[in-house]
Amino acid sequence: MLFSWFVLLATASSAWAAKSAGQIPIRNGVIGGVSNTTTKVKVDVVQPFATTPGALRVTQNSGICETTPGVFQASGYGDLTSTKSIFFWYFASRDGSSTAPLSLWFNGGPGSSSMIGLLQENGPCRITNNSESVTLNPFSWNNNANVLYIDQPVGVGFSHGTESVGTSLEAAADVWSFLQIFLKNELFSNLAANDLAIWTESYGGHYGPTFAAYFLSQNSAIAAGSVSGITLNLKTLGVGDGLTDPISQYPGYITYAGSNPYHPLVSASVISKANTSWNQASTGCKARITACNNGGSNSVCSAAQSFCNNNILSPLVGNFDVYYVLSGSNDPYPPDISSYLASIEKKVGAEVTWQETNDDVYDNFAATGDWMRSSLPDLELVINSGVRVLIYDGDADYILNFNGVEAMVASLNTDFSAQFNKQVFAPYTVNGLLAGQFKTAGTFSYVRIYGAGHEVPAYKNGTLAVGQAAFQFFAQTMANQSLFST
Image (tube, rainbow, N blue to C red; front, side, top):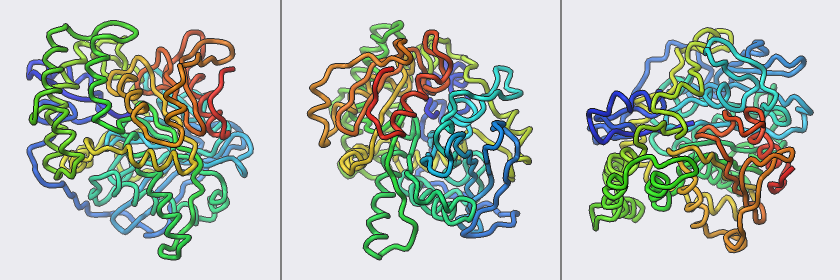
């Protein structure tokens, strides 16, 4: 999941705290804001754990979450070093696991746990509304793929250790190292030859393109003999409700606040003020994002995040939930997962208390200004490399709304962009029921799902079941198919 943001007025801070739901920390009274520290945070944690640097520590078949007979699962840690341990939870495919692709899942934040996606969205089980138990998910993404949920960077979720990562590229390097450890383990080495996919959401608009581009560059280095490692057979990238290119996406807040499929979020005067904040010469949000991406320093990019989130993103949501505008600011859905994870942590081999979002990791990213640095060049590289790419979103999500995402998609300069931009949207149906609208060109597709909030697989659509529409676009993409209606 992974975004949330800010309060323009201090008097609104309590309401905004409810909206944040633990996803993005509040800084200086602003959700998604920047702390007063001007240097990158680095927290060294004394490790009381018996780590195995360069290897996995695995708990097999815990019986938690996936209860389908005969389906293998494993969880535990990949120890990058003696003081950096990444937590994973792996579920084999319910069908043909030996040849099924391996799909990685990352939630965003930055600093938020991928257990969110597992338990609230697309995992083998789904949290119940009382947050105390789970039910089997018939539309789990491990129906036809081996799925690996990864808590990253170090310090996020159940992961623990030195919290030094503060950019998407640094995160990519650690994830690549983790996968090298994972795929050399005897339990999982057979997966190295299988197709590999990256699926992510929210800040995953940064993570997904950056990770994919880094994997491809490492593959080239391995082929050239300059790096030693396992080649990652990357075939697919999926990004949901993602922040990829702030310069094209931030105007979407202004558009969505005034005109979306449901209701205006704020008054015309609030929209006018946000427009002024966007357009101010040299000091406005647009100018600040531009300066950041024209070689701006960490402080320039961090200041852009602070200004834009104070003056554009925060005031425009009004009294609605940032992740689902059909609800008020204190929407309890999707249900909290912290108490359930606390009840099962030892059974899955977790060594620390789970936290949805690590504030220190978030501060690392805020200090470097990574938020405002565009990942569009990496996304274009990945698309042009032949990796199949799907961008998706829900039309009831404000925090990464479809106006901004579609503007980002329209700004792409790829082998398929001219063909894509000439097309009109087609209805996207699931079993004959309208679920959204889509376009596709070459190996690139985009779909907007009606009625879905920020975590698209967590929502129903009409008479379709929770997660049914999302599973269709996942299954089609993983089968190396362009999207099509059924």
